[in-house]
Amino acid sequence: MQPLAERLRPKTLDEYIGQKHLVGPGAVLRNMIDSGRISSFILWGPPGVGKTTLAQIIANKLETPFYTLSAVTSGVKDVRDVIERAKSNRFFSQASPILFIDEIHRFSKSQQDSLLGAVEHGTVTLIGATTENPSFEVIRPLLSRCQLYVLKPLEKDDLLELLHRAITTDTILKEKKIELRETNAMLRFSGGDARKLLNILELVVEAEQGDEVVITDDLVTNRLQQNPLAYDKDGEMHYDIISAFIKSIRGSDPDGAIYWLARMVEGGEDPAFIARRLVISASEDIGLANPNALLLANACFDTIMKIGWPEGRIPLAETTIYLATSPKSNSAYCAINDALALVQQTGNLPVPLHLRNAPTKLMKQLGYGQDYKYAHDYQGHFVEQQFLPDAVKDTRIWHPQDNPAEQKHAQWMKQLWKNKEWDK
Image (cartoon, rainbow, N blue to C red; front, side, top):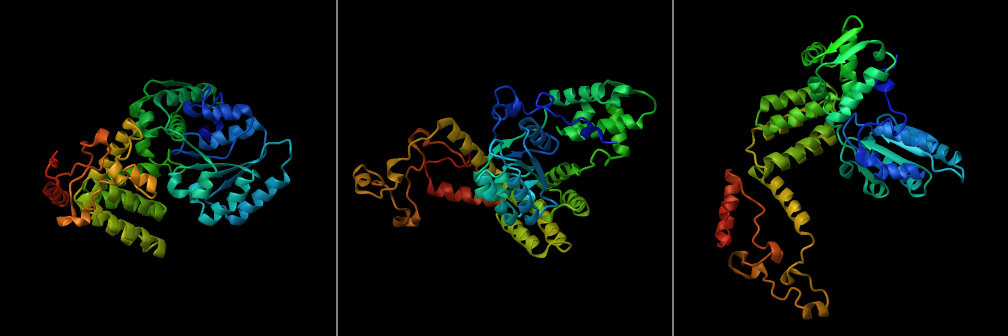
């Protein structure tokens, strides 16, 4: 018998729950699908939000050949075989066959390269699904040929709608008398993941005797404590554990961090995935309080690529403990976020004339670069001048935090910039 999540998989857009910003009335993907012609795109979002389902619905709606590859099990030869089959099935009156690649972030560069020609010439329409940021995991030439659509975790109302649909329309569950008296625990454990939510519902219902089931928060919590992996059939706990891992590092708890690392190692997690998260943590959470953290995290990533398992667990452990025990600062993280917010708020402010490049005679006549002061011509290799646009010239963006490394930088800035307040 199929799992509940598979039995309830939507077959049309009208049955599809969530992602209204993409498939709701008038939304971009909905309009493209209704027009009967789609271009290649990549769906980026967490597990259980409908990436695979959406691809299948599109193929059914367009009535076009649909090929599926898993990046975990397919090689370059499999890609080329599918492309050849797609060519042979292509007719002038048809839209391009759809090639759906699940977990496309796991494709190697050579595998992604093998797709380029077929996508560019329209031999196939590519739909990729990924839980990882495509900017890092998908090669630029392929990314430039695809639209990117971001799928969001399902909202509370979406999840409640899904639960109601399950107990009223599923061929097995509707034979029982199921009362959803309390749903907070189910929603909390699901984390916006539809598949996880349905797995929890199925587990709880199957564990109860008789045809009457009253679902409460205590019942759900007890069932999941007795069988914590039952609702994690496809490794979805992966995201909960990496979250606990990063939060333990951020919270300066080396014991918690190394425990969650061990859970990932024992569970067969991709070591490159762990190493990438360590690099991000070194920048986001340790930052300028200990810049060596980023160097060590990068060295760890390189080492993992060279030695793999099982020895790779050792540099991962070394880096994890180093990051967890390092002083913490998110001043660089906050600074770039504040700078982006300022840019979005103020738009394309003009570059001050003295900072502009002046490659032509006309530009020099217009004053480009004319009053720029070359720092190395001055004592201490510094001279005060304006580097921000006029409209925001007095804005402070980077705020040093209270740790020895950044306070040293702050003192140096106070010494140079006599008219700026570096303590704010």
